Each structure stands twice: as structure tokens, then as C-alpha cells.
Length: 391
Image 1 (tube, rainbow, N blue to C red):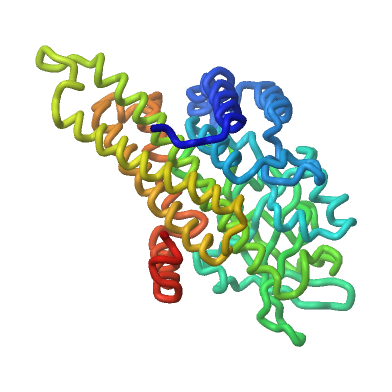
Image 2 (image 1 turned 180 degrees about the horizontal axis):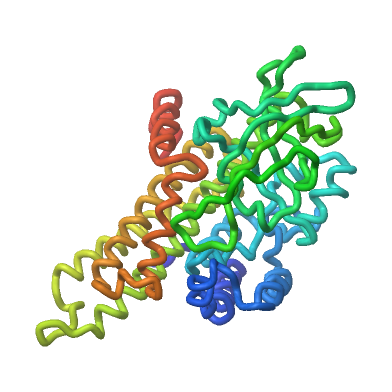
């Protein structure tokens, strides 16, 4: 039986699937051969369609100007977005809800509201050369000087910097009663002292770049601080929970697309007088892929519904790690099998399996590596036991 999704969510699923298939997916090859970019003028039109479909800032409450979708609805949407390569699904933006809910009226007017409306773009400057999954190891500092903070440090992998005009920068406080506390700041790109050191090339072909930034005596008013001193890590954990769930959803979408494409190819590819779909070696790869996708999808959908029910956030934190771990590794296995089924074709950049084989690899790294997810899961098992986590 199919998963018991409400009628309105099934309709949303169908609508987003049609949008991806008919309006976004046709641009994959152009993007692959043109640094991840849409053809000229296409992206703006597609963003208008995103708004018309009610998907812009889908995670933000309607009273704040967002789409106001439930977690389950967002998961369904993200799964469909995962069915397209080259990061083209990133035309649906999701500003950080926790930051939006905490922002002062002035911050909301200057940064958050425009980001929700698609008038400004945000990015996150958190990771460092020696601090990735271990966020507490960051060395970027902020010191208080009167009505300002002064930020110094270096940030790596600042995803979407080139599509944004402000950042959320995480630093550790030096000096004062709260020394060592994590802080999060709104920082405009044109703030003096912000410097792009270099923009490395990455395995995937996305239009969203991930540069390395330097912050040299960057002075920002205290009014740019998000929340209070010490709140920085809470915002990061909130974002990690959300994004790990959405990564799981996108990985399910990618696996679905790969299975569809590989299965169709296997049924028409003739070898030794028969379609290769008749051979057990191919059947076993497709069967294993289908089984793992079903398991990942069930886990992801159920976790989304648990968020909507408002279940214990600490349990959800562990379950988001489980979903991200399983779905990302599942999708990588499916991509590897798909390349094998396509054979030489699967090694061509014009082939969907080749692109996913490259693109899905990062899902086992960003927002916490697979190894870190396992540590989180094991520690929660020790603290809470099996029943709390998977009953």
C-alpha cells in the first residue's frame, strides 16, 4: 500500500512533480555544461512559478510572509526537488525559521522579511578549516567594543555566497562574562573587512559557490546579534535538524529518479540477445535499490509527521541524524548501482547517473558527516534507550 498521505499533500506532490518534470528538469544538461546556470532569463521565471505554487520560503509561517507548509508537506516538496540534478531545485529557498522567529523588528525589516520575499539572499558562514561537524571547535572570534562587536576569523564552504548579499556568521565571544559563548550575527557582504580569499572548484556542477572568507576586524553593531550571547549554537542545532530531514527527503527523490531511469534503460538495452533487465545481476541491483528507498521514505515521512506533532525535540534530533544517515548512504548506493547498470553511458556527464554519483556524495558530509550522525545516534541510545528513539 502507498503511504497514507492526506489528499491535499498528494495533490501538492503531483503539482510539484509536474513542475520539476516539465519546467526544471529540461535544463539539467544546459546547467551541467554551463557552470550550473540556467539559460538566460529562465531562473527568474521559475522563481515566479515557485511563488505562484506557494513554495517560496515554504518553511516560514504565513503570518511572516512564507508558505506556511507543514513539515510533512515540506518533506514531500523537498523529495520532488531532489529528483532534479545540478542543484536546480535550489530555486526553492528556505530561510532559517528559528532566526526569523527570533529576529527583532529592525532585523526582520532589514534582512529576514526581504529574504522571505525573495528580495535578498542569505548564506551561512559557520564551517572553518578545523571546524566542520564539530561546530564548537570554531576559532572565529567576536569581541565587544562599546555598541559594536568586532569579528575576526576565516570561514570555509560558505554555500550560496554568490547568490546572497548577507550572511549569518557564527563566532565565539572573547572577553566579558559570557566568554566562549557562541554568537550569531547578521553581516552584510559589503561590510568593511569581509574578504573572499578564494572560491574552490567542487565535485558538483552547481551555480551556488562555496568560497573561503576572511573576517578582518569586521565591525558590526550589537543590534546585528541574533538573540542573546550564547544562543548561537541553539540556532545551529535547529538548522541542522531541519536540514538533515530535508537532505533525507532530497536523497529519496534522487534515488527515485535513478531507479526510474536505470529501470527504463535496463528494459530496452539488449545484451546477448535479451534486455539486461532479464539478468539477475541487474534485477538484484534494482530490487535492493527499491527496498532501500522504501525504507528511507517511510523513515523520512514518519519523522516529518513527528515534527508536526511537536514531539520531544531531543528525540527528533537523534531521529533526524538517523534519517539523514540512512537516506544519504542509501542514495549513494543507488547512484553507484545506476552507474553500473548504464555501463559506459553511466560515466558520461550527460547521464543522470553520472551527475548524481558526484552530487550525492556531499550528502554524507555536509550538515554533519555520517560518522558524526552515528555518534549522535549512539549517545542518544545510551541516554534514552531504544524505546524512546524507535518505538
